[in-house]
Length: 80
Image (cartoon, rainbow, N blue to C red; front, side, top):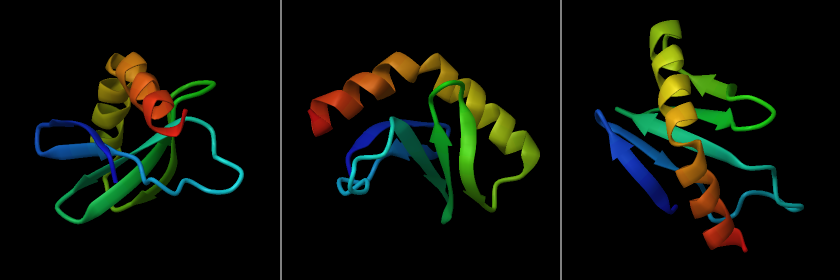
């Protein structure tokens, strides 16, 4: 599970086995055992959410938008 970055107690990461065929670029976020997955394209939006409230999801969406280039670069570095 490569970690892309950490911020405000959240860990932003992806799993090394992201499906076959490989799913589109996305990021997982975890904090205190709560996890969500966000698609980056065509716009940042949750793919699933297992416990974050609406306020946290908005915050996470903004963080992901701000770090989208870093996330995409890490994705392509890892998956080729």
